[in-house]
Length: 459
Ligand SMILES: Nc1ncnc2c1ncn2[C@@H]1O[C@H](COP(=O)(O)OP(=O)(O)O)[C@@H](O)[C@H]1O
Ligand SMILES: [Mg+2]
Image (cartoon, rainbow, N blue to C red; front, side):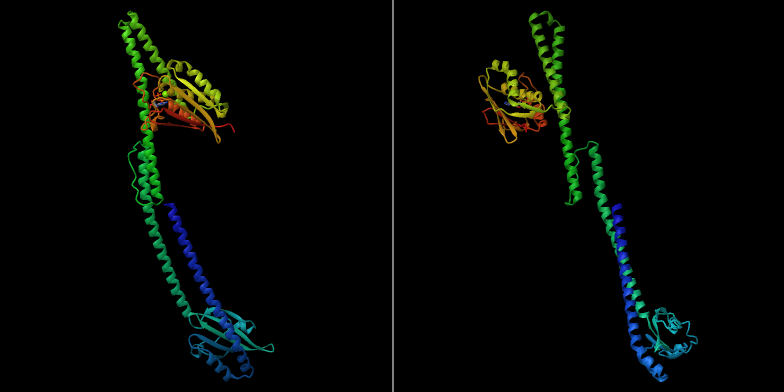
């Protein structure tokens, strides 16, 4: 889990930087305020020290130093202009020192500069912050004042704060690691399950379903994977059914022809009446086969999107008239008439393809019409679309069949020896859809069927 370790790294470095920064500011602030304190005190004291030094009042120096110094914390020392100690608030320690010049700040102050800083205590190892200030009057160096305060308590406190923060930091890192480890586990488990699922689906196992528990993103992904698998399953079933249908529909006419030819070979050819009938059968069956193959190829091309439509603005009326003219003989044979009420509309389409769709619809209308009935064709404009309806007075379509009639190979006319194996409407639908149009069917019991088409108008 690369992402999580990146997050972990970010959190760790972020918190470390922040605590480092807090500690540093805390330290700097404290030192700064102590320095200022020292400065203020030395300024306040230097006035009285100057007075007593000028008056050569050793007693006075002594008493100032005693009054303001505190044994361990604040040490005050006054030196004369040569750098020898005049008074100190810590005589015990200072008695052991003979040469004061190496003590930080002393020589600078003697040369007339204020010196400030942090140094080890005189004869001790603890850190102290000090200020050494020359005492002058009228430009003449009278001596120096050195004040120092211990940092021991502060450093102890600072150390304990540092340790606390460090401990908190370690705890944070530990908890973060724990949490991200848990997250990594809880993420990688379902991802692994899904990966295995995807592998199974890829291998053709569509019956599995992923378990879905909560409603986080992973479960949404699982839902989508389930949906995908279900869709693949139905596509797979469609494909199998299609293949089964195709092979069945192809086998029937072929075996009919084979059987007929065998019968002819076995002697039927010598009987004129039988021979003619058998030849007629062979003719019909091969024609059926050719129509079927033609339809299948069309469907396949439409499905694959290979057929490129030659879309142009065409007069709807002329396409419809061509379709009617082609069907004239069949209509006369069945004594079916047609009534056309088509507005002058120009639609965007491929005229040959649209003709094919209309032929398929008219073919059905004639096929399912009762003799002496009428077929009504109307077309009108509706917004940017042409609405075309083809209505017959036949038996109509039962409501249970309506949703399925546009499926490939769905037909109710198997028993009758009429043309078509259930591809006509499937092809018409694909043609309309390739044009950006649509086709729907409706039917009232006993009142015939109505097919409604929409096509984009010329803009
Ligand atoms: N005008 C219609 N009247 C009644 N039923 C129809 C009509 N058009 C189509 N059908 C129904 O829809 C089915 C599918 O039509 P189609 O795809 O053209 O196949 P086919 O004509 O080969 O049966 C038909 O079998 C029939 O049941
Ligand atoms: Mg048909």
